[in-house]
Image (tube, rainbow over all chains, first blue to last red; front, side):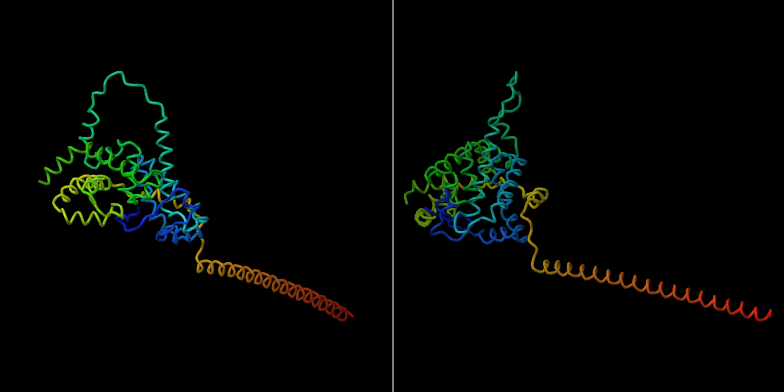
Amino acid sequence: MARTGPLGGVYASHFTDAKRQPLTNSPPDPDADLVLRVGRGDPAAVQALMARKLPRMLALARRMLGDASEAEDVAQEVMVRAWRQAPTWQPGTARFDSWMHRVALNLCYDRLRRQSERPIAEPPDQIDPGPAPDAGLMGMEIKDRVEAAIAKLPERQREAIVLCHYQELGNIEAAALMEISVEALESLLSRGRRALRLLLNPLNDRRLEGLG
Amino acid sequence: MTPERFEQLAEAYGSDLRRWPLAEQAKAEQLRQERPVWARECLDSAADLDDLLGLYRVAAPSVALRDRVMARAPKLQRSVWSRLVGEWRGWGMGLAAAGLAGLMVGIGSVSLMMADQSADVTVASALDGQSVYSEAVAFGAEEKL
């Protein structure tokens, strides 16, 4: 099942092992020429690829990690690996954009794993008198509440929403990146959106009242 | 497409049919036209969440980040023109150096020649002076005589 994203591309059917398997019945990689030129050391191509991909990788990492500084580190590392990969990249295999997403997701998961392995500070002796987490969410600007709600999602649901909604990847490409079936991806998306709706529900009510 | 499937797709992919699976977009559009009021209600619910998600924007990469990325970029290949200019500059520098060296050698040679000549003149003058002196001595001797 292939589909086009809002940006118009029809997406590849598989990413896993795609570097070794030529894509069939798919349009050419829109980045292929640029990557080829980067591999030859063309300065204009280097600038163009950075302008095209750095914001995209930064946004992906930012929404996956919820931390601006860590997101910058990940985006920088992805670009550095792209520079190294370009001279040996073979057009007609995987899309370069998919490969970059794969690298970025791996780096994000490495950092998320490290975060979860960090020892938790000793529990406080007293109950925190501050606002409850939900109340804290309500006290924030709307965009910050959305950011916090996305950060609260389970990692796989967050990944599905980030890839499909924000990165505008096709369902098949996103599923391949996550190494799950399209049906599993749809389930993660549905559950993720339901959770977000619950977390942001008071906002919805208020916005609807405002619109009414 | 069944209404249930339409609702599932709206729940998973949101209100924009362009984000839905390509193979199901046409059928979904057909159902939307057949049942516009129901479809509108279904999509509006998803659109509210889409609008909220749209508020989460990520700032553009900072100049410092872009500089760090560029600092690790592959060694830039010079353009044909800049290479030619570079080569001509190299040749030019070589020629200029050769010319300068030639000039220095030339000046040196001329200086040596001039030095030789002036030495010759000095020697000649000295010799001439000696002969004049000799002649004077001889003349004086003749006077005394």
